[in-house]
Amino acid sequence: MAEPDTISRGNRETGCHHQMIISMDKNEFYIGWNAEAPGGFAKHVRKVVIVLFLVMLGTAVILSLQQRKFSTSSFEFGQLTEVTGIFQQMPVPAIKVVTGQDLFGRSSCITIPLVGYGKFGAEGVIAELEQEKKIILDKKEITLRGTLLYSDGKTLLQIDKNDEPLVKINEPASKTYSSVIKELGSVQLSGEVLDPKCYFGVMKPGSGKPHRDCAIRCTAGGISPVFWVQGENGETNYYLILDADGKKMNDTLKDFIGEPVTLSAKAVRHDDWIVLYTDKESIRRIKGLNWSKQQDETISCGPDNASR
Image (cartoon, rainbow, N blue to C red; front, top):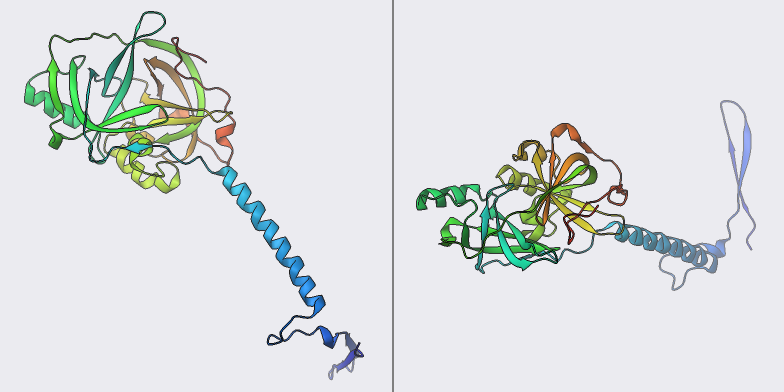
């Protein structure tokens, strides 16, 4: 071991003089071109590397647990499908495919909301078809041609005027159907306002801040937003959102797209979808990462009229 080097320094103005003793083992001095690092130096580096590795591993685990599961959404791009069912204008334009009867002998159906091509709702296409055929399509059995989007048990149909979407009008209808409508009372739910066209098939990701700008344009174009809610056990529910009078509130909802919010609403079941009737004052932003797991209550469509 080398003797410590002593460095003497003095302050010429004050006359003060002190000594600073620096101890350094010259055998531990690392030179980059040496074949091996000194033992003490190498041991210290190993400790630092191990600590950094554990920190990185822990960070990766925490971030992965905060991520949503990979989307299973599908968009049958370039493939047209013909769907026959009862068209209903309210609460949102949709075609109801009668699937048979439930356990109680009542007709059951799958509700397929309609969207237009690009970032537009279906109302414009339906209005053009009604004007062209000089007929009101509401509550009539029709066959539509379009592109299916589906994910997580929900299906949408994109209709485009260029695809000649109205295949036929069945008169008299081969099937009749009366919607099951039931009021579920007042609820308070926490979740995210989504653009359903992108979320259920067109885009990945179709939610959150990465998709916010696109979703705002889709909502401004007339596509009715949905409300996505994740329960405590990871189950998901989707709701349509309308104002208290049953009209679209896209101009209001586009300001909340892609952000966690809590809303208070009157819930009404329309067959296999639940509609939330609310207003701007009943929607509040949420701060924090765990909003989706702090659910007080969720409601969903069950085999009976509803389950809470």
